[in-house]
Each structure stands twice: as C-alpha cells, then as structure tokens.
Length: 436
Image 1 (cartoon, rainbow, N blue to C red):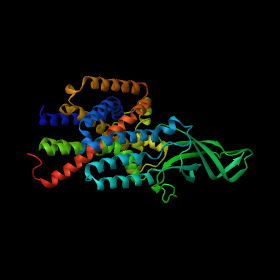
Image 2: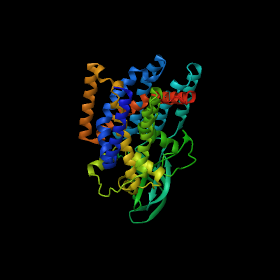
Image 3: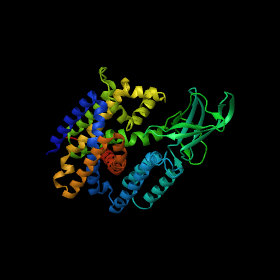
Image 4: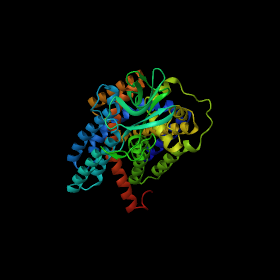
C-alpha cells in the first residue's frame, strides 16, 4: 500500500473519529481506551523494541528498557500504593508521579539529543539528583469548616492518618474548645483526589458540625523545607502539565501531529502535510463549534466508569482553562454537562480514537503478517484478558493495564524526541523541499 493511499485512509479515519466524538464523546472514549488501547500498547511496544526504541547506541537502548520498567512500576505504586495497601504507613510514593514521568522524559531526551560520553553521563547524574531532591507534585490537605478554609497542611510523609492541630472542636455538651488536634483518616476514590474522614478529636470531644477535609495539591519546594506559595487546591502548572497532560493529551494529540509531520517531511508528501493541518483543525473544532446536543445524557455506568478513569484530566483542564472552582459538585456538573466540558470530552475522545486508528492503519509498520506466531498469540491473549477485565469493571481494567499504558508512553519518548529533532533539523536545512 502506497504512502499516499495510507494518508487518504488516515484522513477518512480522522473524520470518522471526529464524527463519533461529537455524537457519543464519553462512550467513544471509554470504548476506544478499553478496546483499542491495550492492543495499541502491546503492538507498539514490540515495534519499538525491534528498533531499539530509536536510541542509536544499542548499549544505551538495552539500559533504557529496564530503567523505564522500574520507573513504571514505581509510578504504579505512587498511584495505587495507598489504595491497595492502606495499612502501610510508609513506603509508598504518592505525590512522586510527576517526578517519575519527568525522569523518563529527561532520560529519553538525554539519550537522543545529548552527545554521548562524559557530557551525557554528567547530564543524567545532574537531572537525577535534581529530581530526587525537588518534588514537583507535593500533596497537601485543606481543612474546611462550614465551607471556610481553616488550615492547610503539607503532607511531608504519606500516612493514612492526618492530625490537624489548631482546630476548634466542641465537647459533647456543646462547649467549644479551641486549638485542639483533630485526627482524620484517608478514604480513596481511585484516581480522584484523596479525601479524609473524621476519626476522633480526643476524649469527650467531637468534630465541629460540617467539618470536612478537601484534598489539594500544589507546591514546588525542595524536599524537607517549608512551602512558600500555595496554589489553592491545584497542582502547580509545571506538575499539572507533566503529571496530567503530558502522558495523555500531549502524547495522543501533539506527539501524533509531530510524528505525522516528520513522516510527511521524509516522504515529501503534500497529502501528509494536509493530514497534519486537518488534525490540528479537528482538534480545535470541538471548542469552537458546539452544536446543541441538549438531549445527550450519559448513563450511570458511563459516568461511574469515567470517574474511575480520566475524570481528573477533565477536572484539572477545566480548573486551569475554564475557571472552574475546586469544588466536587461544581466539577461534576462542569465535566458532564457544561458546553466547555462536552467540547473538551469530544476533543479527548477524538484524540484518543484517532491516535489508535492512525497506528493500526500503518500495516506496513506493524507488519502483522510478519509477526512471530508465538508473539502474536501472546499479544492477542493479553488483549482478550484486558477486554475481560474492562468488561467486569472499568476501574479494575484501568488499574490492571495502568503499567502497560504508561510503559508504552515512556518507551515512545525517544521516538518523540527524535521526531522533533529530525523535524527541526529538516525544516531548518531544507525549508523549500519539504513537499512536492
């Protein structure tokens, strides 16, 4: 199949993905992520492995895989360690997810873009020390009484219990007693922010009426020092980009566009460049053209499944770009019902669906017909197992495939860096010869 034919097929898949995203945004995403996603991870990881992850030195490529696997396992522990094993007071890595993702990106960037030898080793050591000393995603907890903030506590060490001093509590006879310590315990909602339940306030004391604890995150501070600036319940912009947007929207949309542009430049294909332009237009369209779909509603299953998966991505996007207050009720309404929330979901559904279909359309790259039979059976077996897990429970499927999904993102980082490097180099040297 010629490159031109593949480009036309990709344009057709692009419009198909966008059309479906407009009609059933939440349903399309959940289907694509559960059905197409695992098969994409498995086939792309194998393809990247055959090409040494686009790292020129084979020795470094062999080192890259085990390091990334270890970092991927640490990321799983940071995301689910306290949920799976809440009895562990120490040892999990909640709040270090942004550092782990950044470490994988820096490792790929250094191996592809930095000259080998002493300079590369020094860069890796320097970045490694920096990422160990500075935690970019620092969990904090905001305590509210009568919906008014009364204390903000930085969680230096992750612990299922939180003691907040300086609170006003009341005795069982109604008498108020100020400056008292109150103990709360974590409860978990998958990937949604950590919440705390009241446990006790000491002998003969009880928590004040409507005393709640809302999760918040948002400090960039060296480990072991005091926070300087609070960002009111958000990740900082740097941590938000790295921990939430980089492995999701940036990966499936912007890196896909860059990879397509690099391919169009190498093949000198005008249709390839048209595909890149159309992709960018399709990405913008859900935010500027929002037809009335007032009759569109989602089922309880769809809402619950999305809350257990990518809900935090939408919430953080709407907080950052839509002025959404960090309020659970307002966030749910904005994500599932507002015009901007539906437009964002159409973009997410389109980006993920086309990202997967674009990959599967490149049969000359995947080369199914040349895959070893044992490897093909293994890939299909894991894929079927993933479908069963997602069918049983979307949350269980997401957690079971969490490592695999992030592993393929991490292993693709060198290709992303190489594509950007090659695109810049090609456009700088031959700006007039990129198409014919």
